[in-house]
Length: 391
Ligand SMILES: Cc1ncc(COP(=O)(O)O)c(C=O)c1O
View 1 (cartoon, rainbow, N blue to C red):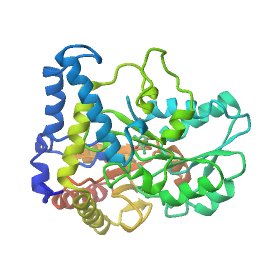
View 2 (cartoon, protein in one colour):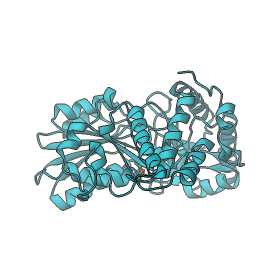
View 3 (cartoon, rainbow, N blue to C red):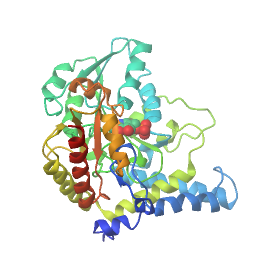
View 4 (spheres, protein in one colour):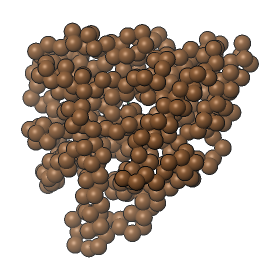
């Protein structure tokens, strides 16, 4: 497909939000959206706002939109329409799917999570374990925050039902070898349950290539509205008994896991977000982000400690950094005053912060394809400045 957007200037021209005098390094908490997404949401509410299944134009348009959104999600993930469900966000979908998956499990069954997971892929399992006496284990990481596959392998037993793991860490940016972890899970007779929320804006998600059984992502992290999308293999979604109301449709199969009325306007925004990404193409995203990530690594002032991989190999451009002289919270306040949007805290990545001994968390710099070399350069200078003022 011909790519329309081939420069960062052309990309940024699509986002009115980026005209604000703020350098947006907060993408891991949610990206800005292009104007086409804003317009698609408004257009739906203006022209086609209705519930489903009615014999009148706005309802018919809504039915058509839902069909299109399902096809778009299926295409985006390389799945089928029977395999994609929408929900309020990843966490809500994950609480629902974990419960449906585990309905037939027995006391003592085991779940393996990882130190790299966001709590959205941990607490649903911990709560299930609490209710049903399952066992949750954690696979660790090495000193550079890479998933320790030997440790993970050592935790697998004939009681392991699921290996739950992230495609990429939302705190330290590590990318996991998804297909390898899925293969390990399958060899043990367990499901591969992938949290792709953080990876979403950084690269193509192909559920078939990695052989995920369940995979979750959140369009608000990849230029869309606040929404969650779940993939589950059709045979699994068919075999589980969903928590659903009786009159709701059973088709497509994945829709059995959607409760109540969907956020139709956000589905319109989701379709527009995927169309936007088609205009950009993953090659531009990957190349530009890699260049900016390397620039950040090269220009990181000595006063700042990086937690995680020191190269762009095996990671996305999400960086957790700390400074001995100020707390992450103080640092982000100073950066905020200087026009930089960055996060501090643990961003719900509780286990990795424990592992790194970072009780107050870290400053998180999240780069995406709409950031510029100038922004990264200015951020490095600001990090240097605030460190010097404090020293
Ligand atoms: C890696 C990861 N998983 C899960 C979540 C939770 O996503 P949601 O807000 O859609 O529930 C987040 C949100 O920050 C995340 O970064």
